[in-house]
Length: 243
Figure 1 (cartoon, rainbow, N blue to C red):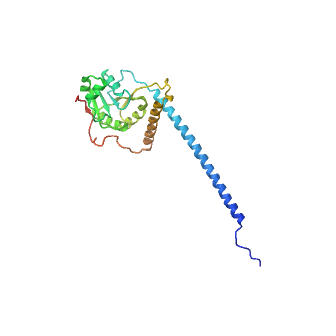
Figure 2 (cartoon, rainbow, N blue to C red):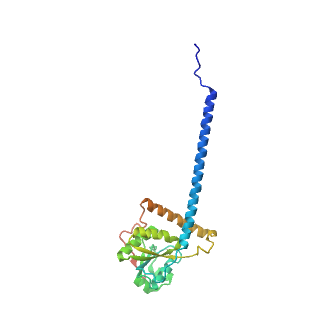
Figure 3 (spheres, rainbow, N blue to C red):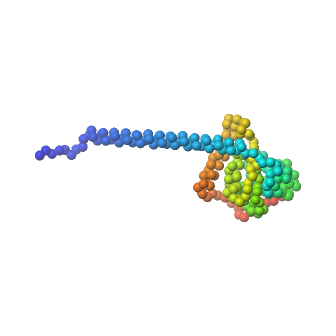
């Protein structure tokens, strides 16, 4: 009887290792192609979404001066927002104005001086909100003010690039209220070469990213902070006093 050796064939072992290595390489190349295609699609989706966003805000137009609204809210933080809102109030648009998100160290007298507004306007018709820290806070602060005054139709004054996110957050906080956009425009996105302006491009893309994340948050139902100062409690916006 012939006894065969139990030792493995070195050639077969090397071939198995080589085959395994080639299979891993093929899998690696396949995964890399998938990742590359995914990255290209992702970038394409972001770019298309960004230009759709800029087209949307480029189309925003302020309503006629006779806009039928109960009141006005202006969200602080951008070019000529407060000045424009105060001018509308003095022109007879709405009964009251809420300036939301004012720094607690800023008095109504300082706001009046900075905007050149008449004292009588502040005395009778301006409320100042000191609790909002961000756009979500603006929406929650405005919601409290709306409930306090029973408003149903409110004019929103903010920069055009900030308007889509502002309207979304305001509608989330006050779903039964109708909000009318009054965009403040610093540059005409239809005629000016904003794509060659690094500051404008950065501002627009940053706002697009915030808007996209806010939409994703609302779609997912995720909870978020109130955007109000920690000591907000049950405080309401205060009527302006010249101190």
